[in-house]
Image 1: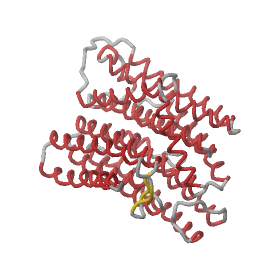
Image 2: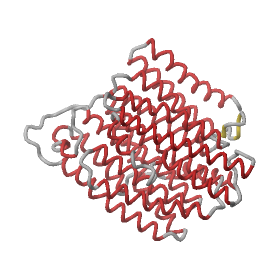
Image 3: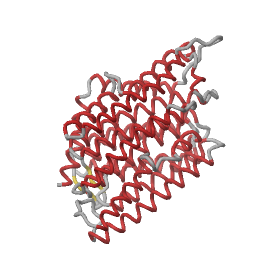
Image 4: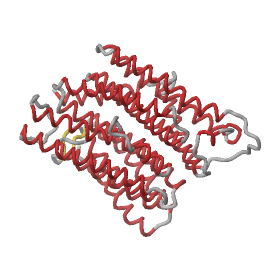
Length: 457
């Protein structure tokens, strides 16, 4: 039964080592082909891991929770490789750094101890900062700000881990009893992981990072890195602080602040990437509602929304990156897009409607499950504030959609490149398929949440 574990580990090692060799010895096309093949094999091997659940080598846990995120992160990284190939002059750099970051993501969601989470986050954020730095000539400021946020996050996380060890004499992800040291550790954990998860007020520099990075790097930060931060926060709160009622009251308050901050500031944005940055912040607020509920249904709803927003954000950002490549960065630059490329305009509209939560999209299912779980567990006020924020988001998404369908004199047809087209189609399929028929994904996220709560008891 260990064969599946070894196969997964061998493919992960092959991804890293292969990229190290190809970084200096191959062209872009062969390098891309290698990554697509290995990532596809990794995604396939993940499906076999659900049969070998357990703790291995004393550092990783193979469970429904970790397997779900393994699959999500692997598919997302495959799509990001396509985007980087289409938009980057240094694809080989992205491929190598992205491989290291993916290993860090795997470590975080399969952690059995706080040290593994720490190492996984380190292995993710350092390559990510270099990806931003190398993504474009003007990205030094963005990379510096990302590095500053990551440094603060890691420093606070280290302090929190020390406090837990001092209080419990253990670094395992296991339930702890309330106490002064543990309460201080809780605040530090929420603060440190809040930087990674884009939670207000720890996300002040995030829009600058998104705007200053190339589109494919922004897609990675919002589509993957942020989700890893939320997953880590979820694990720590449920597995370590499940008996702390204060923890989930804090999360509920942060959910409200994060939603309103993201949506209200997004209203004033004219740059597409900054608007999507604040939109992404508001989405983190919705996900926090499910965590604040502190039940299996709430966590499964949050995981579903993590899945949905991954594809919504990467899909939308792939179109924004395509426009950015033509020096079209503002909302007004989308005027006439429907005449220039009908498919791109329709796809971007669908992604934005899904972010609003329009029925028959995965975004609607995620928000419905989150709000329903809040209402069922006595948090009607939190659900109502979430619905109000969804209504607010309509106004800034409508600005973009109105611009796209406005006539433009002299508009001419422009084509999407093949890699970007593939990314859009895959993301559209995920958003629409699991919006119209969400039951298989609901079962998957319920299994993931069930394991998390099973491990906490």
